[in-house]
Amino acid sequence: MTTISAEPAAPSTPAAALDLAGVSRWYGNVVAVNDVTMRLGAGVTGLLGPNGAGKTTLLHMMAGFLAPSRGTVTLAGEPTWRNPAVYRRLGLVSEREAVHGFLTAYEFVLASAKLHRLADPEAAARRAIALVEMADAQDRRIGTYSKGMRQRTRVAAALVHDPQVLLLDEPFNGMDPRQRLHMMGLLHSLGDAGRTILFSSHILEEVEQVSGTVQVMVAGRLAASGDFRTIRRLMTNRPHVFAVHSTDDRALAVALMAEPSVTGVELGRTGLTVKAGDYGAFTRRLPKIALREGIRVRQLLPEDESLESVFSYLVEA
Ligand SMILES: Nc1ncnc2c1ncn2[C@@H]1O[C@H](COP(=O)(O)OP(=O)(O)OP(=O)(O)O)[C@@H](O)[C@H]1O
Image (cartoon, rainbow, N blue to C red; front, top):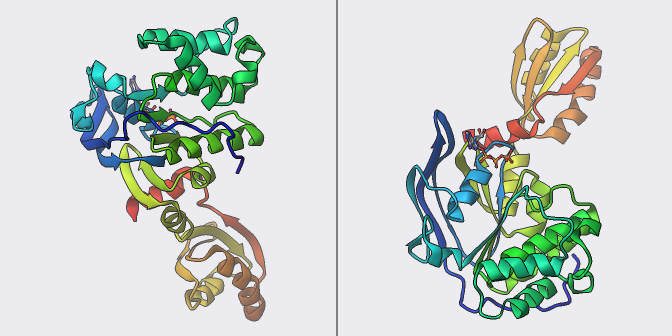
């Protein structure tokens, strides 16, 4: 993990909890967020879920940009929707946001400071830029920056008013590994300084590396939440599904049913569908069983490895 040399200042007021109580949001017939209840406190939380799970909608409701159709989002007890007092305590880095390439980072962040009507916008812009380690490049045009530098500039703009809560929508998208590490270090140090940081991602590894706590969303619902080790265990211990075809599927099915690593076998027209609790144990055992039974395995294909299926397992669990 890279370390951030500029010591991030703690927010001027301590972090307050962001509370979601029975929050739903629908667009016509589409239920984007369905009855989500969660509490976020100081530190880094990852919001994990496949595309379309409702992460962006949830973040926008948290930030007060979107009204919940039902339920409430509150920061330290105050609703975030239509509440300018709360906007001063929150920052949002949205997923896609065009930044004028002809501006310098300093000009861009300064504009954000002025929008917030800060007493000393110049000092606030310089402080936020130092926090994301962009001071050296702050007078260059944004058009000349790398993706990671542009992203850090947007984080600086969202931090310029020293918010207690920072929400980031897919901040690692399109970054190379070095830029990722840098951004991870930055989020860590902001969280360690007492801010409430929530970032969304559809990649478990990303969330694992940055956050202590993970909230998993699937199809608008909160499917799981907890420490990343618990989430990882839930995801890797799920049953794996394999398509198996051999010279004698019927005999192989009988032999497999006696195997402890196998939790289900189905004989179909094109072969067997086998469910196994442990991926490694099953793939090691199968050739041995086939040899013992005098059967030749013609095909072994894992069937169920899409991200969506992993997530839907969590919903069913
Ligand atoms: N303005 C809108 N009008 C209609 N449907 C919408 C609107 N915004 C989002 N949706 C739908 O709500 C659901 C959740 O979308 P959302 O963007 O919140 O998910 P997400 O997890 O952020 O996914 P992604 O990472 O792909 O942005 C999707 O089915 C999406 O099509």
